[in-house]
Image 1 (cartoon, rainbow, N blue to C red):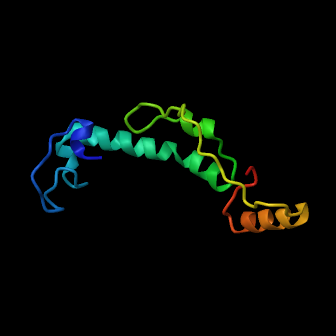
Image 2 (cartoon, rainbow, N blue to C red; image 1 turned 90 degrees about the vertical axis):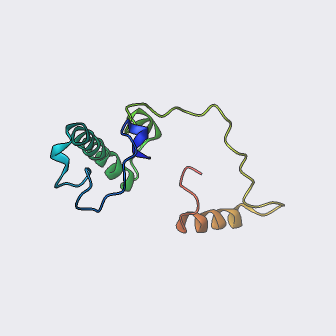
Image 3 (cartoon, rainbow, N blue to C red; image 1 turned 180 degrees about the horizontal axis):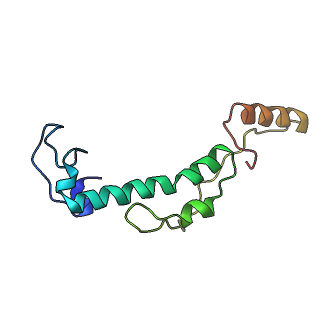
Length: 114
């Protein structure tokens, strides 16, 4: 997001060492320093959710209940999800369909729930 989205005016271009956002200069800008500390805390608050995601234990509700960086929350869409076309058409037998589904699951194209 551009810095003006968070209430900071667009600034001139600086070299990395002269930028007010630089770690060496930010102490001179209390509002920017507070924003960066808030951002850092927000990022750390996601760590537990990310760890759960890697263990395949993360639930959609936990993500939706976590605030966005601006303090707002995600909302559940009222749109219907797109229709998923059948993986196989025609009169295939159950065994070949299960083999196809297992192959897709092993390739991580589908999830166990799907």
